[in-house]
Length: 600
Image (cartoon, rainbow, N blue to C red; front, side):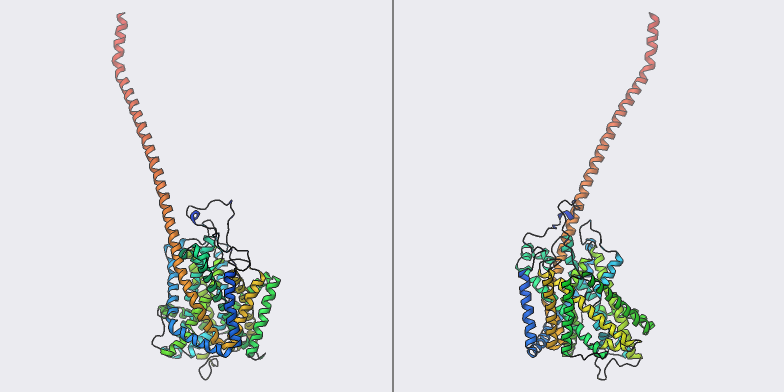
């Protein structure tokens, strides 16, 4: 997934003279510990240099010794899948369960910000930004290719008529691009948002684990290690997207008869596009990057609408609804499917698809997590979970239903041609093959190439910004040279992966780098649950204290009122008794006085 908006998170440091917060929020420490890395400085050497060294060694090795690197990547991939394939499946299932739990539990009312913070964006604007987060190179690259691949080469164990296999192909695609991907981002995003907006910590992965590890460990060696893992994983996630993007751009240029899709062409494209990215960074054309992002969303939306209404419209709408139903019906079983009885064929399929995707999403998690945390300040946990899970997933489902559905319709009911005679699919060129069969196909192909190129630029720019934040301890505006360094590093790794073994090497890199960071995300689940429990317990104590104070005040007031009432009743009784006594004595004494007077 590429990002089409440049993320940045405010640390929300409050001025000293700001009014006190609520009784609950007043007890939340919002000042970064004294020994933390403060934003505004240059690189954090404890994070920057270890991460840069790992990346440099990897890139040089793959570029200088491509054959050896190819063999090594193949061996690593097979061993990781063999020993840890089940772990990726189980870990992502845990992330989905955790995301649903925090959204539906009593912790859903916790605000990602201070008690007084209001959302910075309206609901519709927030949805639009989440939509932007869901669009990227990945959707464009796999929008047609993945459903076609699952149709041509179904998951081991999937059998039936072409129509049944097509339905299963769309269901499998929805699994890879739906709730599971965004549940990973929910875990990371909500952890970052809570640490940054609620507790005032710098933008750094390490501070999401403070409730679990403690301030001293997070600010020390353990925190450095966590940030290095996050930084390396993020760079490989960005490089994966850039590699996929350039593979598809070169395939599109070949489809349009502009140039051949050779390795040198792909390397040249990376260098050209990354140069444009650096020029934009140096010139500081932030507005231009925002304009590119908005333009790309418009282009993507226009492509979606055009394909919908020039393709088999009614079929696509019906298929969209049906595919969602099939997905919901089968999602539980697919979530835990490890193809345990499929042998080597199952391992190979799992490595190429599900495990690759889970690794890619985990690598992207710091990047997307920071973006969605930034735009969600002031939202509650429940709003965050619902929005992040549902909006981008729905966008992805619609995209695959329209583009992938058009390709499947052509294969089943039309003239075919997208699946080769040998049953293989040209993954990089599948999109252009589908577009070529629509009215104005050549223009659509050129427009799609432009779409991917802009996604490439915005992804590299946004990725460089996030990596700059992670390598400076949370500086929301890292220096240009730092961002340029990470942009060049991502380009170098993308080139190294292409030289090593193309798409297979890209998949291996995503799977491998996600392994250590998946452990960090599991720790985030525990840390966030602990933080939410502590805050909820604090809230309950505050509410009980307030209730006791209110009860004591009420009892005191009631006692005082009762005593006043009793006193007034007592006085009234005495007055009444005196009046009654006076009234009783009055008539009998007057005649005596009168008779006495007469006697005188």
